[in-house]
Length: 219
Ligand code: BG6
Ligand code: MG
Picture 1 (cartoon, rainbow, N blue to C red):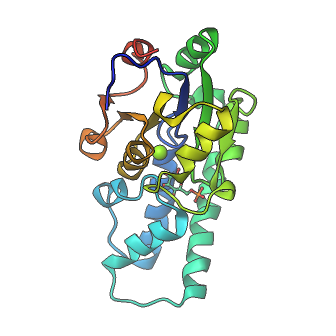
Picture 2 (cartoon, rainbow, N blue to C red):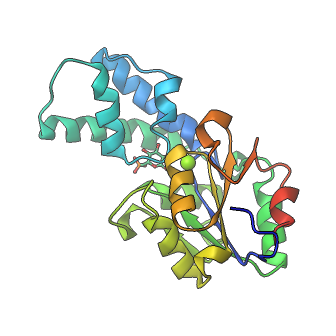
């Protein structure tokens, strides 16, 4: 909920699809696996995978086939997707930071706002390293630090704790439905970027971060 009287002190960024377009690489890696398995998969189904862990994503994809897979096979398939994904993210450089992100980070730093990354990806640190952003944030939470993935609020609450800012004074930025729900349940202000239908439960929806005046006005 937007409370005009609140001066926000912390900003928590999702990574995939917010800071860089790795959401597209996740899609392409799943698509390759699904095609090999002859399982129907498209971009609409993919919207539901955003913010969701690797193994949960696979479970959603396999809903479109009658074939059954043992737990061991499922883990092998998830590993295979991850190998495809890791090949793709090797190519990432600072040029892949999405429009507006660096300017926003710079402005937040100037204003003394604390910043964290909250990503359920086990590859988050590699992506941040390749983007040249590993030292930029005050705190990073990835899959290794949490028990419950998005839409559970745990990852955002952990991030708020990590930057020592009360959750109600934090803004969370997400491109996924599960992520927006997690931010809202954490009692933070939610900013949705990207696909409108996916993030429409956010307090503020932006196309991307190229115009971040809506965020800076909240500080
Ligand atoms: C999220 C992505 O950030 O990380 C999901 O939005 C992805 O699409 C999840 O499944 C887990 O990522 P990884 O790299 O651990 O497979
Ligand atoms: Mg995301």
